[in-house]
Amino acid sequence: MSKIINYLKKYPLIYLVLRIIFRFFVKLARGVDYLRLKYIFGIGQVGRNVRFDKGFRVFHGAKNINVGNNVYLTDVLLNAGDNAGSIKIEDFVFFSHKVMVIARGHDYQKLDKERQEAITEAPILIKRGAWIGSGVTILKGVTIGQNAVIAAGSLVTKNVDDNTIVAGVPARLIKSI
Ligand SMILES: CC(C)(COP(=O)(O)OP(=O)(O)OC[C@H]1O[C@@H](n2cnc3c(N)ncnc32)[C@H](O)[C@@H]1OP(=O)(O)O)[C@@H](O)C(=O)NCCC(=O)NCCS
Image (cartoon, rainbow, N blue to C red; front, side, top):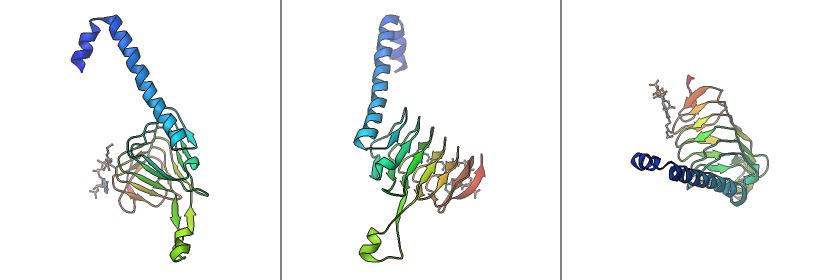
């Protein structure tokens, strides 16, 4: 690739034109991600420069999802819930692979059909700059602190403080940043 770029640089005008075209398509591709999130997945609010990969899913409550700027959603599953549930993802948050964010559950005091239908929901907030490692599950009502890191494979059942790293099932503090 660098050989091609060096070769093209010998022809500055062609290089410049190709660069402009390339940038145009990069921007278009990112714009397509925005349009797909907003109008195909139906997400309530989507910021600038938000990207996602094949496998990204919204299970419930797309309109209750709010995504900030410069967020990388990869193939995350978002289940925001339709009533009291919501998912807010602030700027510069990024997800590794196979993450689930689930703002929903069922009332286990009920049985059978009633249990299936007795939905419990609570908001999830993922603050600015948090990194959510591969294979993480985040449950309802949890706030992930600013710049926090959730280690691969963790199950987050409680709030995570700013600038900390948590790991395990359930996730516990392993260090501060
Ligand atoms: C969170 C993470 C960044 C921590 O890295 P680190 O600072 O090098 O951590 P350490 O290796 O010093 O581990 C500190 C302790 O936490 C434990 N730990 C680290 N990651 C863990 C995990 N995912 N689950 C459980 N425990 C973990 C270590 O075993 C160690 O325990 P000990 O003190 O009892 O020996 C890293 O473990 C991680 O999970 N990265 C995510 C990787 C990923 O998802 N990549 C996707 C590509 S973007």
